[in-house]
Length: 217
Image 1 (cartoon, rainbow, N blue to C red):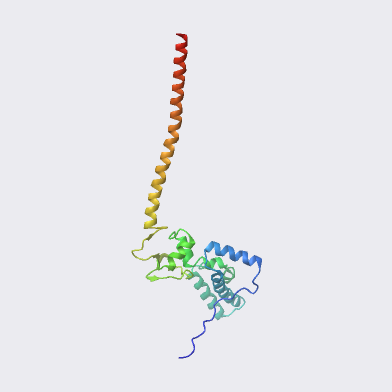
Image 2 (cartoon, rainbow, N blue to C red):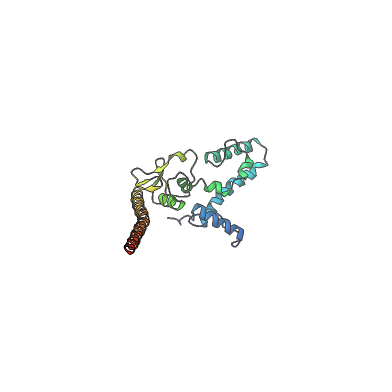
């Protein structure tokens, strides 16, 4: 047996590690999309760079072959849900990393209201609760084509429904009922306090009248 093939890295790290503007942007992206680490950002940037570099090469070439390649590139991005069908090669150059991140399975699970948060969406995918059609996808960074988006679902007989699991939903209903009961009790107590005070005042005034009448007698 030969030596195992060395797996080549499919992304590039930043040339300068301490650029404040870039660090702030990466921090915002990590928070907005609930990514595990910056490596996930760099991988999506590599995907974006691959498309934009191809567009740059084709933008200034006027041949029949370049026209076909432009159509193929735009068609591919349209199928991925990143562009409109009538888009131009200049629109490809206007793509941002957010356009790529919006097509990740994790993002779509959250946007389809199948999870309460981005972090929860990631957990559902990693734990094998999410299917795309008949295929179980356990990779949050999977880029979902537009035609597969309607087929994102929970696995059959899953405890997860909508934003909450069945167990969580039952517990939440029970908690809501208990909270409402407590709120009613507190309201009743508040109503009882002024009634008691009124009774005490009435008793006091009645006693004063009795004392006055006795004094007169």
